[in-house]
Image (cartoon, rainbow, N blue to C red; front, side):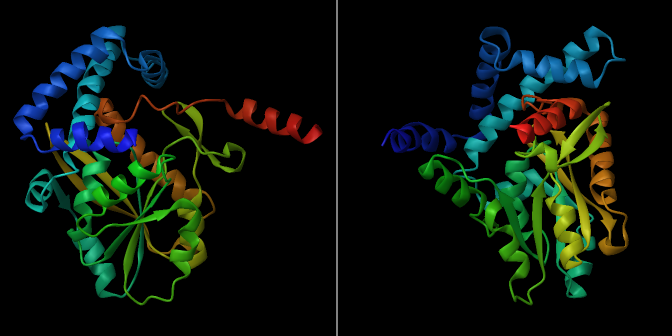
Length: 299
């Protein structure tokens, strides 16, 4: 009941406000979170400091401040998605190199698209359904709150994106469906089982990455693309597609994820503030993970 009250009395009415009003709210939220209680400030500062040790403290502080500005906008823009129109989504999320996907469609091929928590991935989810001729599906981890999980799915899928619970992902690759489609993975967050992940050098540290996108690409022989999100200006983004491989089975194991990580790292280094630094991305070192696994095995 509390979730419904929060949604219908606060979140939905706020989502109906025009953007210029929403950005004034975002400015206020920034003042509270940056200068006030400091949401995850220690995590954010540690992540940025460790990722850019060669920058001066002043430069790193500038990234931190810019991240908070962007993060507050991201929250408000995500709320807006509950009532955003198709025209608003198209104006605010443009797509580049979409002919790459359309060529796959023309050749009857389905595709895996890998992205990260950079820019505004929520707006991307809303806008992507009609970007190309390929049917669009996305892997996601369901929320523990059933009401908000349903609202999130309906928001992201309002223009045609189909949401796939992570545990059901293989079923969608095995479907006997001749319609060419794109299945979207966000592969840059801490994996639930880091001991089974692939460890890659990322922003100067050995980092575990989810392996599912490469695993399915090789098993079902689907081409793989990287979707880079670029922030043009406040509230406006470009989703740009880059080919990773057309022949995943011929690529050395681990190299698809490594190439993706390298491209994501370049995106972040070009404009660091727009990645999700508040996520606890480096919970343990590789040594700590495998030492824990060994000790667990002994017990």
